[in-house]
Amino acid sequence: MAIRSHERREFAGRSGNGLSTRARSPGDPRQAGLADHSGPRTSSQPGWANWARVLVSLALVFHIAAVLAGAFGVPPSSPLQRAVADLFIPYFDLVDLGYSYRFYTEPPPTPVVTATLRFGHTRSEEVVRLPARHLAGPPMRHQRQLALANALFRDVLETKERTGDGSSSPLARAYARHFCRTWPECQSVTLHLQHHLIPEPDAVVRATSDPGAPAFDLFDEGLFTTPEWLGDFPCDSF
Image (cartoon, rainbow, N blue to C red; front, side):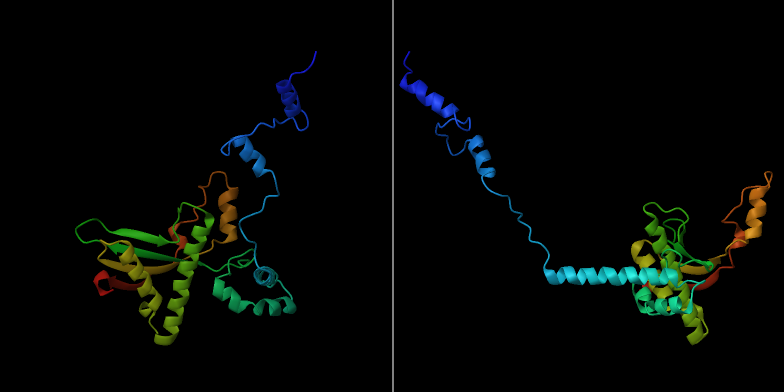
C-alpha cells in the first residue's frame, strides 16, 4: 500500500535523532533546552589574577613558617630553633599568635578581669568576668577573652613600670568605657585584676587517686590571688 504524503513526513520527523521536525514556538521549553546544551557552558565569575594568587600563596607560606617556627622554638629546643622563632616575634605580636599548639608548654597563671557594673536604683549590680567560665559558641570566643584579659594585665605591668601605679592603665580606662557603652543604663564600672593559679600536680594526683576524696575543684578560691583594684570609672566621664 502506498504511503500517504503526510505519513511520509511523520516518518521522516521520527527518524534521525528521534526529534520531530515540526516548527516550535520561541517559548517552547523543549526548544530552550536544546539551546542550553548547544555549546559549552562558561562561568560568569572571573578567576583570580596571577599576581593575587602569588601574593596569597606567599602570605600562606609565611604564616605556616611562623606557626612552625613558634612551635619548634618552645623549650626544650636548640639555639637555632629559638633564633628562627625570634625572627617572627613582631608577627606574633601583630596577630596575637601566642596561643597556638605548644606555645603554652610552660603556661603562666591566667589573668582574670572582673568588672562590677553599677546601675543605681534601676537594677542590681552585675559582675562580668573575663574570661567567662561558661561561654556559648566556639572555643575561639573563650580564647579571645583570654587574650583580652592578658592584654590588660600586660598594660597594667607596663604602667606600673612607668608610673608606679597600675590603676592609671590606659587600657583599663578603655575597657571601662566599652562596658559603659555596651550597657547603656550603667552608671559606673569598677575593675579588678587577679590571677588563676595553676594547681600543683601532687595536689591533683592526691585528689583524683583517693576514691573517698571530693572531686578536685579547679575554681577553688585558694587558686586565685587577691584581686587588685584598677579603678572606679564613672560612665558620665566618657
